[in-house]
Amino acid sequence: MFSLNRVQLIGYQTQPVQVRQTPSGSSVVDLNIVTPYSFKADSGEMLDGKGFHVVTLWGPMADVAGKYVRPGAQLFISGRLQTDSWQDEKTNEKRSKTKMVALDIILLDPKEGQRAAPDGASAITQCLNRADIIGNVTRDPEIRTTTSGQKVLTLGVATNEKWKDRNSGEEKERVEFHNVVLWGALAEQAGKAAKKGYRVFVSGRVQTRSWETKEGGKRTTTEIIADTISLLGVSNTAVQNNISNEVRSFNAESGGGSPRSESSPARSSSPDMNIEVPAVTYASEIKAEDLPF
Image (cartoon, rainbow, N blue to C red):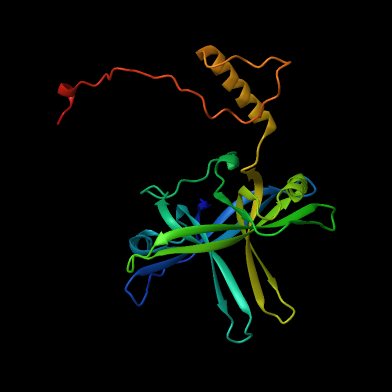
């Protein structure tokens, strides 16, 4: 079943770009992108924050970045989230790191260089950090309450990707697991409705946070801080009733039936899929002699 795993960033490169070569001769680059943003604190005060993202580019895209992208350059990048896992040789622990794999990149700076930011226009000079996924909930959600009384929910969502191996032609599939964080009223609603196995659409921003273990090791995790979540593949009574009314109205006007009276037996709220579609005839406005070939 179709899944969606897309991320879009507008941000600034923070370091010099280094192009590496794989054993097979492919170029690869890891960009380090910062996306400034503003958010409202529990107190209602607007605060500034920064998101840091590792973005991997392959092949010709990596070569272009190595040639033209400099520290401070503003970029638009579209891609997908990918989590790589490995075994720590020292601790034997399983480690993982989530990054963005770029599918498109656009250099946004004019040839003459970046312009000075206009005064009083901070609202329209913000960067972009947007993640959209469609996938299946992997576990029943659990709502927690912070010390300040805020409701927070962490949701596991799985997306899958299929592709054909260039060398072998073999069909391959990869599953990505995303941690989705919801706050406040959105967390409460999702906690009641988004059960394991449900299909959901989630939209939000990508955030990576770090912490230190008791042993002094550094750990990071990447999450999607959601501002929108929608259950998919579920019926909507109001919409179904509207569709049924439209179908009955269409049948009555086209002679395919008459509207059900209030005293008639109730029918299913699902639309009638056996509607006879009237034939449509039209004359093309394009003449063969007008075609340029």
